[in-house]
Length: 155
Image (cartoon, rainbow, N blue to C red):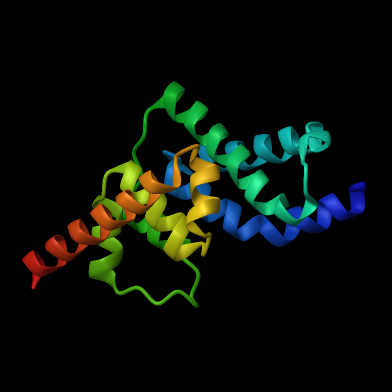
């Protein structure tokens, strides 16, 4: 992959990277730092990419690792408004559901965001989070069950 192809792929993935980083970052600054560092790391380690077809998944995994590093250093607090502002308009989620997703524990929230909002497969989500596919499936099931309970309680 040459420099121009790398730049194009990063530009195409930019919005998705930002949304994933907002899900896992404490604030705007940490989010931006994580995205920038992930892009730099990906460029430096471009030789490690085995298949260019999986560039976005590979880059997202690097981003998730960067977010975790920053979280360990600074803690994790994000406002509901900041989180929901970054969900794309083509993903229709009402306010109660957005609030419920935000209140999920980070382990469950991350699989919900990657699978349902960003559209990654179970296999890709497992790869990015360094989890077995069965764990991703069980977390998705648990998150759906918990979301249903949370939403039923609100109604």
